[in-house]
Image (cartoon, rainbow over all chains, first blue to last red):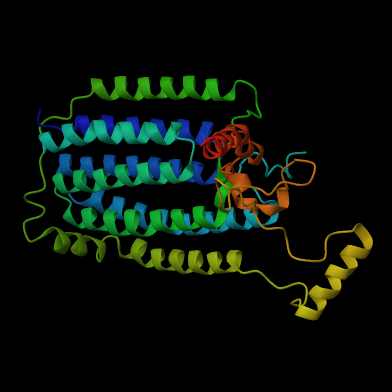
Length: 100
Length: 258
Protein backbone atom coordinates (compact mmCIF):
# COMPACT_ATOMS: atom_id res chain seq x y z
CA UNK A 1 0.00 0.00 0.00
CA UNK A 2 1.69 3.14 -1.17
CA UNK A 3 -1.03 5.77 -1.04
CA UNK A 4 -2.20 7.78 1.96
CA UNK A 5 -5.71 6.30 2.33
CA UNK A 6 -5.02 4.90 5.85
CA UNK A 7 -4.05 8.39 7.03
CA UNK A 8 -7.23 9.87 5.60
CA UNK A 9 -9.33 7.16 7.25
CA UNK A 10 -7.58 7.73 10.60
CA UNK A 11 -8.22 11.44 10.21
CA UNK A 12 -11.93 10.84 9.54
CA UNK A 13 -12.18 8.55 12.60
CA UNK A 14 -10.59 11.21 14.80
CA UNK A 15 -12.92 13.83 13.33
CA UNK A 16 -15.95 11.67 14.10
CA UNK A 17 -14.80 11.11 17.68
CA UNK A 18 -14.35 14.86 18.09
CA UNK A 19 -17.87 15.44 16.71
CA UNK A 20 -19.46 12.98 19.13
CA UNK A 21 -17.47 14.54 21.96
CA UNK A 22 -18.82 18.01 21.19
CA UNK A 23 -22.36 16.63 21.15
CA UNK A 24 -22.20 14.50 24.30
CA UNK A 25 -19.87 16.18 26.79
CA UNK A 26 -21.32 18.90 29.02
CA UNK A 27 -18.13 20.45 30.37
CA UNK A 28 -17.25 23.48 28.23
CA UNK A 29 -13.50 22.83 28.48
CA UNK A 30 -13.83 19.22 27.31
CA UNK A 31 -16.09 20.39 24.46
CA UNK A 32 -13.30 22.75 23.51
CA UNK A 33 -10.75 19.93 23.58
CA UNK A 34 -12.96 17.94 21.21
CA UNK A 35 -13.01 20.91 18.81
CA UNK A 36 -9.21 20.89 18.94
CA UNK A 37 -9.31 17.18 18.14
CA UNK A 38 -11.40 17.87 15.04
CA UNK A 39 -8.98 20.60 13.90
CA UNK A 40 -6.08 18.22 14.39
CA UNK A 41 -7.84 15.53 12.38
CA UNK A 42 -8.32 17.91 9.45
CA UNK A 43 -4.65 18.90 9.75
CA UNK A 44 -3.65 15.27 9.40
CA UNK A 45 -5.74 15.01 6.23
CA UNK A 46 -4.09 18.14 4.81
CA UNK A 47 -0.58 16.89 5.51
CA UNK A 48 -1.41 13.46 4.10
CA UNK A 49 -2.75 14.99 0.88
CA UNK A 50 0.36 17.15 0.61
CA UNK A 51 2.37 13.94 0.74
CA UNK A 52 0.08 12.33 -1.84
CA UNK A 53 0.30 15.12 -4.38
CA UNK A 54 3.91 16.03 -3.83
CA UNK A 55 3.48 19.76 -3.19
CA UNK A 56 3.64 21.77 -0.02
CA UNK A 57 0.39 23.75 -0.20
CA UNK A 58 -1.30 21.27 2.15
CA UNK A 59 1.39 21.81 4.75
CA UNK A 60 0.99 25.58 4.48
CA UNK A 61 -2.75 25.19 4.98
CA UNK A 62 -2.14 22.98 8.05
CA UNK A 63 0.20 25.63 9.42
CA UNK A 64 -2.45 28.32 9.02
CA UNK A 65 -5.02 26.07 10.71
CA UNK A 66 -2.66 25.75 13.67
CA UNK A 67 -2.24 29.53 13.90
CA UNK A 68 -5.98 30.12 13.77
CA UNK A 69 -6.55 27.33 16.31
CA UNK A 70 -4.12 28.99 18.71
CA UNK A 71 -5.95 32.32 18.42
CA UNK A 72 -9.29 30.58 18.82
CA UNK A 73 -8.21 28.71 21.95
CA UNK A 74 -6.99 31.90 23.59
CA UNK A 75 -10.27 33.73 23.04
CA UNK A 76 -12.44 30.68 23.75
CA UNK A 77 -10.79 29.90 27.05
CA UNK A 78 -11.02 33.57 28.06
CA UNK A 79 -14.78 33.40 27.37
CA UNK A 80 -15.10 30.19 29.40
CA UNK A 81 -13.22 31.88 32.26
CA UNK A 82 -15.54 34.89 32.14
CA UNK A 83 -18.65 32.68 32.15
CA UNK A 84 -17.24 30.66 35.01
CA UNK A 85 -16.54 33.82 36.97
CA UNK A 86 -20.11 35.09 36.69
CA UNK A 87 -21.97 31.74 36.96
CA UNK A 88 -19.55 29.58 39.00
CA UNK A 89 -20.02 26.76 36.49
CA UNK A 90 -18.21 25.49 33.41
CA UNK A 91 -21.16 23.47 32.13
CA UNK A 92 -22.52 24.36 28.70
CA UNK A 93 -26.08 23.74 29.95
CA UNK A 94 -25.96 26.50 32.56
CA UNK A 95 -25.36 29.32 30.08
CA UNK A 96 -28.96 29.44 28.84
CA UNK A 97 -29.91 33.05 29.46
CA UNK A 98 -30.62 33.74 25.78
CA UNK A 99 -32.85 30.70 25.42
CA UNK A 100 -36.28 32.29 25.84
CA UNK B 1 6.13 5.24 7.25
CA UNK B 2 3.82 2.23 7.41
CA UNK B 3 5.15 0.76 10.67
CA UNK B 4 4.93 4.12 12.43
CA UNK B 5 1.40 4.53 11.22
CA UNK B 6 0.16 1.10 12.30
CA UNK B 7 1.72 1.51 15.74
CA UNK B 8 0.38 5.02 16.33
CA UNK B 9 -3.08 4.73 14.76
CA UNK B 10 -4.54 2.38 17.44
CA UNK B 11 -2.94 4.45 20.22
CA UNK B 12 -4.47 7.64 18.84
CA UNK B 13 -7.90 6.10 18.34
CA UNK B 14 -7.98 4.66 21.86
CA UNK B 15 -6.77 7.94 23.39
CA UNK B 16 -9.37 9.92 21.40
CA UNK B 17 -12.12 7.53 22.50
CA UNK B 18 -10.89 7.97 26.05
CA UNK B 19 -11.59 11.72 25.80
CA UNK B 20 -15.25 10.82 25.27
CA UNK B 21 -15.52 8.62 28.33
CA UNK B 22 -13.20 9.85 31.09
CA UNK B 23 -14.97 11.77 33.84
CA UNK B 24 -12.28 14.26 34.81
CA UNK B 25 -11.30 17.08 32.47
CA UNK B 26 -7.62 16.77 33.44
CA UNK B 27 -7.55 13.19 32.20
CA UNK B 28 -9.14 14.32 28.94
CA UNK B 29 -6.37 16.92 28.57
CA UNK B 30 -3.68 14.29 29.11
CA UNK B 31 -5.28 11.95 26.55
CA UNK B 32 -5.44 14.86 24.12
CA UNK B 33 -1.69 15.33 24.68
CA UNK B 34 -1.15 11.68 23.67
CA UNK B 35 -3.14 12.24 20.46
CA UNK B 36 -1.25 15.43 19.64
CA UNK B 37 2.23 13.99 20.19
CA UNK B 38 1.32 10.94 18.08
CA UNK B 39 0.09 13.32 15.38
CA UNK B 40 3.42 15.14 15.50
CA UNK B 41 5.25 11.85 14.90
CA UNK B 42 2.89 11.09 12.00
CA UNK B 43 3.73 14.49 10.51
CA UNK B 44 7.41 13.63 10.74
CA UNK B 45 6.76 10.35 8.93
CA UNK B 46 4.86 12.27 6.22
CA UNK B 47 7.93 14.41 5.39
CA UNK B 48 6.76 17.46 7.32
CA UNK B 49 9.52 18.17 9.86
CA UNK B 50 8.50 21.82 10.23
CA UNK B 51 4.93 20.90 11.14
CA UNK B 52 6.30 18.24 13.51
CA UNK B 53 8.09 20.97 15.46
CA UNK B 54 5.17 23.39 15.27
CA UNK B 55 2.73 20.71 16.42
CA UNK B 56 4.81 19.97 19.51
CA UNK B 57 5.58 23.60 20.32
CA UNK B 58 2.20 25.16 19.58
CA UNK B 59 -0.24 22.36 20.39
CA UNK B 60 1.31 20.31 23.16
CA UNK B 61 3.41 23.18 24.44
CA UNK B 62 1.17 26.21 24.32
CA UNK B 63 -2.44 25.19 23.77
CA UNK B 64 -2.51 22.24 26.17
CA UNK B 65 -0.72 24.29 28.83
CA UNK B 66 -3.42 26.91 28.41
CA UNK B 67 -6.08 24.21 28.83
CA UNK B 68 -4.42 22.97 32.01
CA UNK B 69 -4.11 26.50 33.38
CA UNK B 70 -7.80 27.15 32.81
CA UNK B 71 -8.67 23.79 34.39
CA UNK B 72 -6.62 24.84 37.39
CA UNK B 73 -8.48 28.16 37.63
CA UNK B 74 -11.91 26.66 37.09
CA UNK B 75 -11.03 24.12 39.73
CA UNK B 76 -12.87 21.30 41.40
CA UNK B 77 -16.36 22.10 40.15
CA UNK B 78 -15.35 21.21 36.59
CA UNK B 79 -16.72 17.67 36.71
CA UNK B 80 -19.17 16.66 34.01
CA UNK B 81 -22.84 16.33 34.90
CA UNK B 82 -24.56 13.16 33.77
CA UNK B 83 -28.01 14.72 33.60
CA UNK B 84 -29.27 15.23 30.05
CA UNK B 85 -31.04 18.52 29.29
CA UNK B 86 -32.53 17.13 26.10
CA UNK B 87 -33.82 13.60 26.65
CA UNK B 88 -32.12 10.94 24.55
CA UNK B 89 -29.59 13.45 23.25
CA UNK B 90 -26.57 11.38 24.22
CA UNK B 91 -27.88 8.28 22.46
CA UNK B 92 -28.86 10.25 19.36
CA UNK B 93 -25.39 11.84 19.27
CA UNK B 94 -23.74 8.42 19.53
CA UNK B 95 -25.90 7.01 16.71
CA UNK B 96 -25.33 10.09 14.55
CA UNK B 97 -21.58 9.94 15.17
CA UNK B 98 -21.49 6.24 14.33
CA UNK B 99 -23.37 6.89 11.08
CA UNK B 100 -21.04 9.76 10.18
CA UNK B 101 -18.01 7.60 10.88
CA UNK B 102 -19.41 4.73 8.82
CA UNK B 103 -20.20 6.99 5.88
CA UNK B 104 -16.77 8.62 6.00
CA UNK B 105 -14.82 5.39 6.35
CA UNK B 106 -16.90 3.53 3.75
CA UNK B 107 -16.69 6.43 1.33
CA UNK B 108 -12.96 6.91 1.79
CA UNK B 109 -12.40 3.16 1.49
CA UNK B 110 -13.81 3.30 -2.03
CA UNK B 111 -11.43 5.86 -3.47
CA UNK B 112 -8.08 4.97 -4.95
CA UNK B 113 -5.58 7.78 -4.87
CA UNK B 114 -2.86 6.03 -6.85
CA UNK B 115 0.74 5.91 -5.78
CA UNK B 116 1.77 8.75 -3.50
CA UNK B 117 4.11 11.19 -5.22
CA UNK B 118 6.02 11.87 -2.02
CA UNK B 119 7.73 15.10 -1.02
CA UNK B 120 11.29 14.16 -1.90
CA UNK B 121 11.32 16.52 -4.85
CA UNK B 122 9.49 19.39 -3.12
CA UNK B 123 11.70 19.09 -0.04
CA UNK B 124 14.89 18.99 -2.06
CA UNK B 125 16.36 22.23 -0.73
CA UNK B 126 15.01 21.59 2.78
CA UNK B 127 11.43 21.48 4.00
CA UNK B 128 11.57 24.77 5.89
CA UNK B 129 13.15 26.63 2.95
CA UNK B 130 10.51 25.29 0.57
CA UNK B 131 7.71 26.24 2.99
CA UNK B 132 9.19 29.72 3.42
CA UNK B 133 9.39 30.17 -0.36
CA UNK B 134 5.69 29.39 -0.64
CA UNK B 135 4.59 31.31 2.45
CA UNK B 136 6.35 34.53 1.49
CA UNK B 137 5.28 34.45 -2.14
CA UNK B 138 1.90 32.90 -2.86
CA UNK B 139 0.53 33.00 0.69
CA UNK B 140 2.09 36.27 1.83
CA UNK B 141 -1.29 38.01 2.10
CA UNK B 142 -2.73 35.24 4.29
CA UNK B 143 0.44 35.34 6.37
CA UNK B 144 0.13 39.08 6.96
CA UNK B 145 -3.55 38.73 7.80
CA UNK B 146 -2.59 36.16 10.44
CA UNK B 147 -0.72 38.86 12.34
CA UNK B 148 -3.89 40.94 12.56
CA UNK B 149 -5.77 37.87 13.80
CA UNK B 150 -3.17 37.14 16.48
CA UNK B 151 -3.15 40.74 17.74
CA UNK B 152 -6.95 40.75 17.86
CA UNK B 153 -6.95 37.47 19.78
CA UNK B 154 -4.37 38.73 22.29
CA UNK B 155 -6.24 41.99 22.89
CA UNK B 156 -9.55 40.11 23.09
CA UNK B 157 -8.23 37.68 25.66
CA UNK B 158 -6.86 40.55 27.75
CA UNK B 159 -10.18 42.43 27.60
CA UNK B 160 -12.14 39.30 28.53
CA UNK B 161 -9.84 38.30 31.36
CA UNK B 162 -9.60 41.81 32.82
CA UNK B 163 -11.94 42.56 35.69
CA UNK B 164 -12.84 46.09 36.75
CA UNK B 165 -13.01 46.63 40.48
CA UNK B 166 -16.58 47.85 41.00
CA UNK B 167 -16.42 48.30 44.77
CA UNK B 168 -13.61 49.83 46.84
CA UNK B 169 -11.12 47.36 48.27
CA UNK B 170 -12.21 46.32 51.76
CA UNK B 171 -9.80 47.27 54.53
CA UNK B 172 -9.31 45.51 57.85
CA UNK B 173 -11.52 47.91 59.88
CA UNK B 174 -14.27 47.47 57.26
CA UNK B 175 -14.00 43.68 57.50
CA UNK B 176 -14.19 43.84 61.29
CA UNK B 177 -17.25 46.09 61.13
CA UNK B 178 -18.86 43.71 58.64
CA UNK B 179 -18.24 40.74 60.95
CA UNK B 180 -19.86 42.51 63.89
CA UNK B 181 -22.76 43.51 61.66
CA UNK B 182 -23.23 39.89 60.55
CA UNK B 183 -23.20 38.81 64.18
CA UNK B 184 -25.85 41.38 65.08
CA UNK B 185 -28.08 40.47 62.15
CA UNK B 186 -27.78 36.71 61.73
CA UNK B 187 -25.87 35.56 64.78
CA UNK B 188 -22.88 34.38 62.72
CA UNK B 189 -20.00 33.48 65.00
CA UNK B 190 -17.53 36.35 65.45
CA UNK B 191 -14.34 34.40 65.97
CA UNK B 192 -12.32 32.15 63.67
CA UNK B 193 -13.76 28.96 62.18
CA UNK B 194 -13.51 25.76 64.27
CA UNK B 195 -10.47 23.56 63.61
CA UNK B 196 -10.91 20.04 62.19
CA UNK B 197 -11.49 17.17 64.56
CA UNK B 198 -8.61 15.65 66.53
CA UNK B 199 -9.16 11.98 67.31
CA UNK B 200 -7.02 9.37 68.99
CA UNK B 201 -6.59 7.39 65.77
CA UNK B 202 -6.78 10.14 63.17
CA UNK B 203 -5.64 13.74 63.19
CA UNK B 204 -5.84 15.47 59.81
CA UNK B 205 -7.68 18.31 58.06
CA UNK B 206 -10.01 15.88 56.26
CA UNK B 207 -11.97 14.91 59.40
CA UNK B 208 -14.67 17.28 60.63
CA UNK B 209 -14.97 18.10 64.31
CA UNK B 210 -17.95 16.72 66.22
CA UNK B 211 -20.59 19.01 67.67
CA UNK B 212 -21.92 18.27 71.19
CA UNK B 213 -24.92 16.42 69.72
CA UNK B 214 -22.65 14.06 67.78
CA UNK B 215 -23.12 15.53 64.31
CA UNK B 216 -20.20 16.73 62.18
CA UNK B 217 -19.41 20.46 62.12
CA UNK B 218 -19.40 21.38 58.43
CA UNK B 219 -17.47 24.63 58.87
CA UNK B 220 -14.51 22.79 60.41
CA UNK B 221 -13.29 21.35 57.09
CA UNK B 222 -12.30 23.12 53.89
CA UNK B 223 -15.02 23.75 51.32
CA UNK B 224 -12.74 22.37 48.59
CA UNK B 225 -12.40 19.01 50.36
CA UNK B 226 -16.20 18.77 50.63
CA UNK B 227 -16.59 19.55 46.91
CA UNK B 228 -14.04 16.86 46.03
CA UNK B 229 -15.73 14.39 48.36
CA UNK B 230 -12.51 13.44 50.13
CA UNK B 231 -13.55 14.07 53.73
CA UNK B 232 -13.74 11.23 56.25
CA UNK B 233 -16.72 10.51 58.41
CA UNK B 234 -16.16 11.60 62.00
CA UNK B 235 -18.70 9.19 63.61
CA UNK B 236 -16.89 6.30 61.87
CA UNK B 237 -13.80 7.29 63.84
CA UNK B 238 -15.73 6.59 67.05
CA UNK B 239 -16.89 3.12 65.99
CA UNK B 240 -13.94 1.03 67.28
CA UNK B 241 -14.08 2.77 70.68
CA UNK B 242 -15.80 -0.19 72.41
CA UNK B 243 -13.17 -2.57 71.14
CA UNK B 244 -10.35 -0.31 72.31
CA UNK B 245 -12.06 0.08 75.68
CA UNK B 246 -12.35 -3.69 76.06
CA UNK B 247 -8.68 -4.29 75.26
CA UNK B 248 -7.65 -1.58 77.73
CA UNK B 249 -9.86 -3.20 80.39
CA UNK B 250 -8.26 -6.57 79.62
CA UNK B 251 -4.76 -5.19 80.21
CA UNK B 252 -5.94 -3.55 83.41
CA UNK B 253 -7.42 -6.86 84.66
CA UNK B 254 -4.16 -8.69 83.92
CA UNK B 255 -2.23 -6.09 85.88
CA UNK B 256 -4.67 -6.37 88.76
CA UNK B 257 -4.66 -10.23 89.07
CA UNK B 258 -1.09 -11.10 90.20
